Length: 332
Image (cartoon, rainbow, N blue to C red; front, side, top):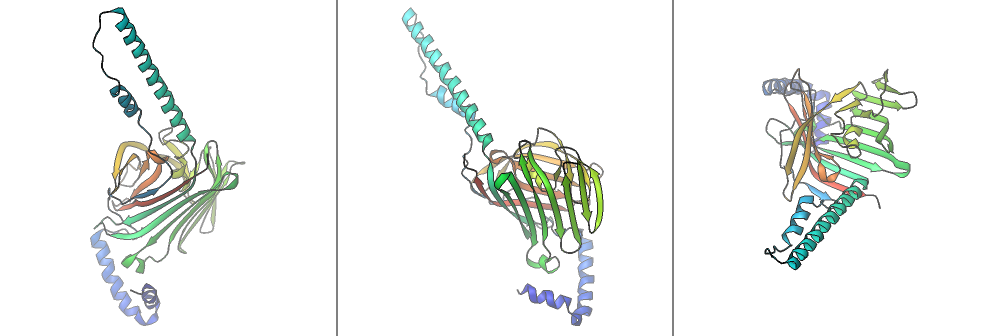
C-alpha cells in the first residue's frame, strides 16, 4: 500500500466530506473499544520476544556450580583407623578447602572484572504491540553511545507501522546527552518531540543546581538535586548504579521535575526462542489509578531495559518488547 499517496489524499480538500464521515465512524469505534487517543501505541503483554543478542560478554559462572563441580570430582574415601590414613585424609581435606577458597577468590575476581566492563555502544530494537489484540502497531529503537572524553548520547525513536501510520505518521523522538562520571550518567540536555504538537526540552545546570525546561516555548525553572536524570538516561543509569541501591530517582521529562519512587517486584525469566534471560523487575505505581511503569532489566547485561511497559490511567497498555540487542564493549 502507498501510504504517502493516502496521506496526500487525506489532506486534500476533495475528500473532506468522506473523511468527516470516516472519522466519525472511527471515533465511535475508538470510544467503544476504550482506546486512548492521546497515546499513539497500545500494547499487550508479550513475554516471548524473539531476542538476538550480539555481544562479547559471556554469561557469568554461578558460584554454586563451580563448587558443586569441585566437590563432585573429589572421590569419597573409606574410613581408616590407622594414623597414616587419617593424616592423608586431613591433608586431602586441607587441599580441598584450599581449592574451594581459590575458587571463591577467582569467582570474586571475575565478578569484579565483569563490573568494570563498560559498554561503548548499545542498540536495542523493540516491537510495539497494542493491548486489544496483540497485533504489532509500531517499532522502537534506542541507541546508547559512549564517545571520547566520556561523553554519552542516547537516542530513542518510536514509529507507527501499518494501518496506524495513516493517523500517526509523526515519529516520537527523544535524545539525552551528557557525561559519564564515577557516579554514572550526568545529563546536560534532554529533548522530547512528537511531531509539531509536543516539543519539550530540559537543560541541566549542574553548577547552579537548576533544571531549565522549555515546553512549547514556555520556560520553567526547578531546583535540582544530585543524581537527577531524564526520561532516557535514568534507564541506562542502572548500568552504573544497580537498581536496588536506591529506590527513588528525581527525573525530568522536559516539562516537569519530580521524584520517581519505584518498587522491587522480583526476578523473572524472559523467554526467547534461543535462551532465557534473567531479569530484575521493578515498577513505579500510581496508587490513585491504574497508571504505572514497569521495567525488566537484564541482570547479565548490566541491567539493560529489555522490556518496558506503560499502563495509562484508563488501563490501556503500552508494551515494548526487545527483539534484538547489539552490544559493543570498550577494550579492557
